[in-house]
Image (cartoon, rainbow, N blue to C red; front, top):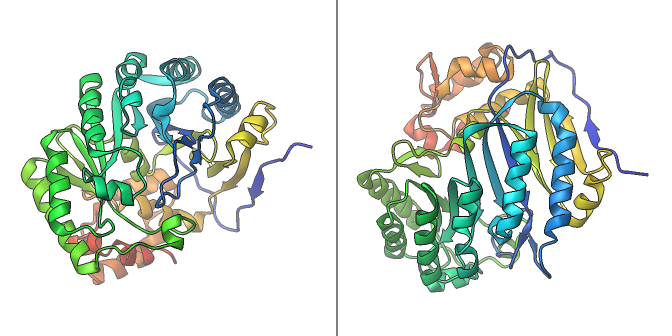
Length: 398
């Protein structure tokens, strides 16, 4: 018998009544990579043979078809193809995927379509083909331009391949993001500065700069490397903030820096508590209805997800649950307070269906501690609140 989705019943509380639905995005998960990095806690699986592209596309289409009744008629503002390493897909497979989305979805003509890619000479040659299929933004997992650092991170590319990939991406699409990490094993402040300078020299419109964290259930968690201490890491963050601002990139989110007009629309929709349909193995989604908000998660194992998705009986969904009203305040703040500019207080009502009075005590406590801006029209962290974001968010856990 097919496995049915595990539905977690909502607890007691009021119904969420939304007067209008938020913007909708599509997230697509491609789970395969050449080798799993020791810091990675995403749903990625080392590729033992060639990607079963036809089987994957058939399952992806079945997954999408079964989700259509949940989003029927709604416009899709962005598509993000993540992984894993989506750039391992052939140009033919990527073209078929995007054609499927256009056939099934009400996709905006100028929708942002992002593809995650890792540097590599074989993949970089495909960027122009991806662009011809409709990809208009490439997010490159550079991580560092230091070969020793790349080796310590378990990356399969070197600095030369990283530079070549950036140049290929810039020729192919109008918008390119570079992912870099700092506080790497053995990294000095000067080495961090060198990485940042090389990234900035390419002049891309967007930079994502992440502090290396030792996530549970990773190789680095089991065998932790020696990483910079807190003072050194803080010095790196100060350096990054000053250098990016001087170079014309605005830090608009905790880890995101953009030139004017280059903010990532897809991620902005997450942070503004918009909706997103997640398809593919391990993908998560959040969908709003006029009387509830639902979260879904797909099965993680690629082979199991493919087998169950094509049966069209819902067995490919690992979990589906209604978000309880008492969770909504924290979930909203968890996203919105990552934005430097914050969000209008009115958006709390629009996106959760709750009165702002539901979180008024938490707001008062956070303002009193100097973590939240007292502006009555905006929900926005103060500079101190941004530096101690976990402390600020903890106020909304109640």
